[in-house]
Length: 466
Image 1 (tube, rainbow, N blue to C red):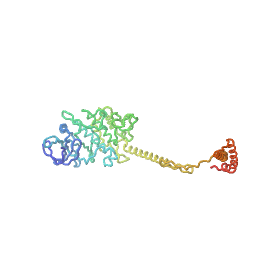
Image 2 (image 1 turned 180 degrees about the vertical axis):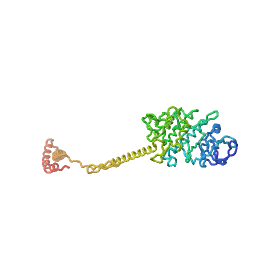
Image 3 (image 1 turned 90 degrees about the vertical axis):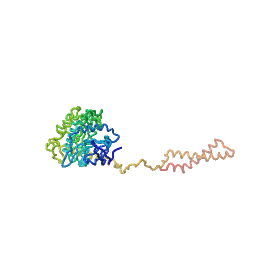
Image 4 (image 1 turned 45 degrees about the vertical axis):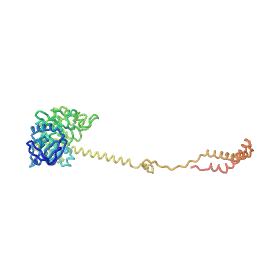
């Protein structure tokens, strides 16, 4: 069953300990306060975890502890690393976890939050170059102490590293996930993050004996980000479609664009980068760290030595900016913060101007167009305009003359011959066809003459056309 607050466990000497409040629970185990030891906490593994390997790993960690003692500053105790202090067992003597120092999480923040200046200001975190140089130096010092014991973080990234906001000391957690060197065996780390994974490990992963090369690469990436406004050393402007769009792909292809030489022709530096304002010694370190020869990467010791010289105020290698008192820059070099501020301001103005022109153009296109003295309004929806029906045009003059001649002839023939023929037929005195035609022609001509001059000609010929 999972451990619960109020339960009694035992330390390595079988002294009873009472579990206090649950602090957090993760994938491998849960962390509890210890009522009898206010300066320590207990991490107890979940029942589903194979504790046999963890027990051997924890014993190796206790035998080879790094030289990272707690730091006292103005009466405040700062735990630099939550390293195991002892093994823990249940009442039957079975290994269930370990004890470690209490680390004041509330007084710390992770490095991820300090990389972005806007977010750092919103959270009251340091933004000056001097403070970031101190953070980078302290991180290098901690890694150097771990490496001296052949222990390696492997999954080293800003989100996994915390720092005390007031003192800028580094605070490391979850150390049982590191790659640990035992007497006769290596206990590997189980996690990696590809954005901080060295080129040679992007495809095949980190093998035993290669962990320090990975830590050196990840440390260099984090130092670059701290000193260059959060910019990743493999970000930049692609010069052709073959450049990978993701950071792991660029790392695997060794596309580092901030070198001192000609740089990388496929990937150009970001315009907001301040790498050209780095001192020569710092640029040389980055060129070594991100070259295609892993053996040249600077060690944590080398980084610690160089970065401490920048972080110490007495060294005078960082100075205040003459234009903006909130800025700092390397002595003898231009202020990268001012250059970046100017570039971002110009970019913002250009973006605003483009937006204004776009809005003005859109408004101009939406205005109604004038056609003579009429205003053409846009048709709404899909309805078609309804047009008034036009009256049918009357026939032309030729058609009307033909009607004036043929009409009376047909009418006269029907009256003068058709009706008498019908009556004769009924009386069995049917006239001959010649007589019938003659009678029809005579009657039709007579009626035609009358109607032609009296009715049809004046009406049809003189009628007005529209």
